[in-house]
Length: 112
Image (cartoon, rainbow, N blue to C red; front, top):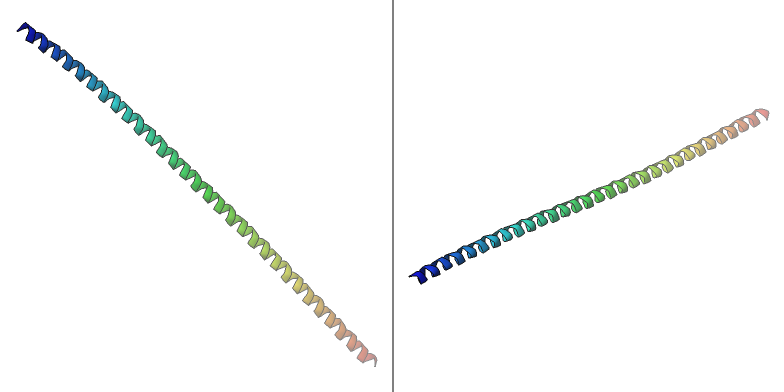
């Protein structure tokens, strides 16, 4: 009977040690799981930041392109305005020349 009691005490001690090891393993597993979850969240944040940065870069490039396009349109409009002004100037000179010729013709008629 003493032998059985020793076995029982020994088995109980082994059971407690096994339970402690199991608890330690579970704690280590939970800790590792938390570390991995944290790492995953960090990677997700990095990914979101990178996507946001890329999105901002695209918006900036688009704004730059729009600004360049507006500048080009303004330059074209400016050139068109210059051409219109030169054309109007030429037309005025032409009219002036015509008026001068008319005046000369009238003077010549009066002289004859």
